[in-house]
Length: 258
Image (cartoon, rainbow, N blue to C red; front, top):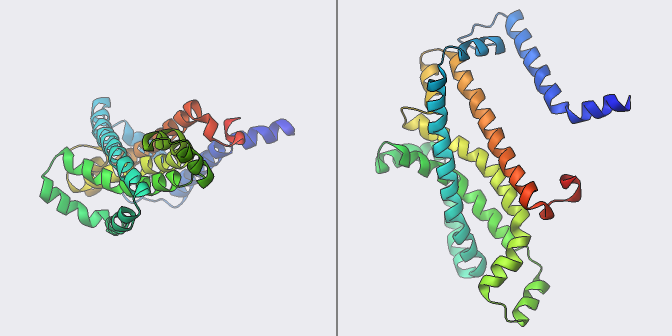
């Protein structure tokens, strides 16, 4: 019994996923749902054989490039902005409301404007991806940098530690859990941003493939691209989690490092 409970506890997500797929397949067959309305898992698998490996790889590579570049650009911009906001109350009161307004604007509504301003190509898709991930990163970085206990900061200043040493050796270690929490959320948002950009302007990519297949009423093919996007999001999330456990295990609760 204990072995069964251990097995169930360890593989509960996988068992649940398999169960949902079986129910999905059974419901589509019993209700005779047409493939152009909502395909069954078996029809999606059959549709995957329509594509050649090169076709899927080209669409996959186009999406991954936008996700990675937009995500890295967001990190590169958000870090200095967060540091400035943390050290300057005046800029904090000035910049944060602007960031809130930008984040509150629906990215789907802004995307066509960005395309018109920057032209068709990869750049507007990267900008859209960067915009959708930028705000959560900044807010989490600021929260993490401000989470340092005040008595430790006072001690460092009494020892005449420089601003740089205070940032890198005192504030940053306390901010690490916040940073990785934001990175995990934002990497999935980066995939969403890339897909939104491909919906607006693209001739390749998984988002473009979904849009094209749906317009041709080829729903099984669009679901193939959707499954790949889900797998991509999960893989990138797990990659960040692996980096956190491998090099920043000291910042995790003991139960997560076990």
